[in-house]
Amino acid sequence: MRAILKKAALGATEAIKWGVPTLAHKYVLFAYDAFKTHVSLMPTPPVVKVFTKELKGYATSKSVIKFSFDTPLPTALILKIAKYRVKVSKEKDMRWM
Image 1 (tube, rainbow, N blue to C red):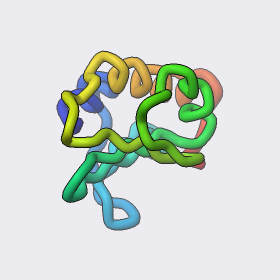
Image 2 (image 1 turned 90 degrees about the vertical axis):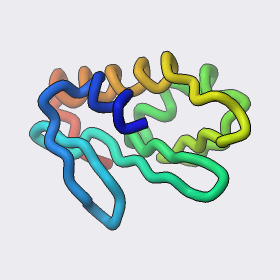
Image 3 (image 1 turned 180 degrees about the horizontal axis):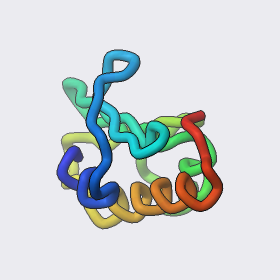
């Protein structure tokens, strides 16, 4: 997950915020975290909403996408989501949450 997100957000700063790893440029772009059964990506609620159709089959909430360890990580989808978040963050000066 980290490698995919760093590829989408070249030059982003890594930090621990709210107890989880994050990547930021001017603002936090996304957070991610690993658990026993899944890895979570937190790209902000508006970004999750944009990808609702593509995220069918994955556990989601308003601001979190969960990828189970039972299936291969959908790297192309994660990269697409991350690049979109970086784009809207820069174009619209979109802050975290």
